[in-house]
Image 1: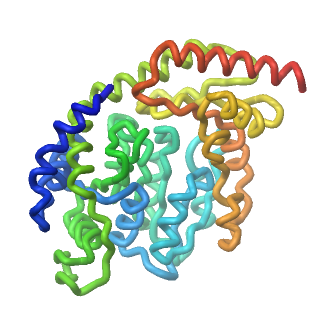
Image 2 (image 1 turned 120 degrees about the vertical axis):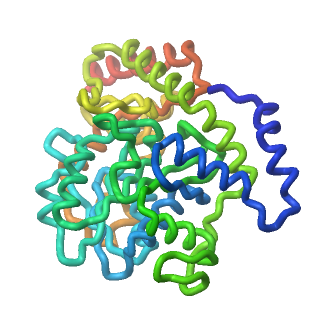
Length: 367
């Protein structure tokens, strides 16, 4: 959905007019009600970022120091940061044999008496194996906290990403399907978890079951009113924004076609991705270098541009004593997730596709 500066200023006016009210959060409250309705859940809690959403969700689920949380090794570092911020220990789980989702056998092997939750991460808007993972978690009594920050509008077997587990966490950062520059939110049907999350994000100034107001420490993770107003403005165009992203992904897939060394990472029939990124597997030599080359010449992608790597290999995670996760390493290194933006024109998509095709041919011929 294309948005002009006049559109944003119009959306901001009600929030600006109420700014003298120090306790006012009418825009955030309205956003929460609208998010809950759109996603078909009982509660939405607006917060200041996607990372804040994850941290708040972990606290709401009772995660505390000494606990362990299972994470896919194929994740972004922000998910790991949220777990450590809660005082828990991240345990990285390898990818499934086909590179999609979490290996349930490895998850089971790494589940201990200290494990309290599992956090599936829907990279590039994909929800691979989510329902099977949720079934495993239920069988062993673990919370599922979905990192759906890249998965607004994705679904699996008709169930929306972020509504399968105990809590779903989303980002409103620029570039997401719905954004306001910076922000996030949580979704849940659990009244107790919602109350805890709402209390934690505002210094526990509101009560939760068995935890009266001011009885615990919390954080200032409130979403600012002007940002909530922008998010509401964009949320009204969610269907249009999803349609545009999916059209962009389909066009880019069609234009890249069957380029040697680049294989489309097609979703399984039961999943409907949101088009957050167009996704391929790189079958060329030195795939990370190839992604870097694409980034250098204008094809923004997760590995080349944002330096995505399997979390257990990230320098910041080495003090966590992570176990090797070779399939996750291979899956991330060979991932070509091309970033899409709603304002990207079809002409620009044609240029991106031609660049990918040309560089893949050149790379294969020179090595």
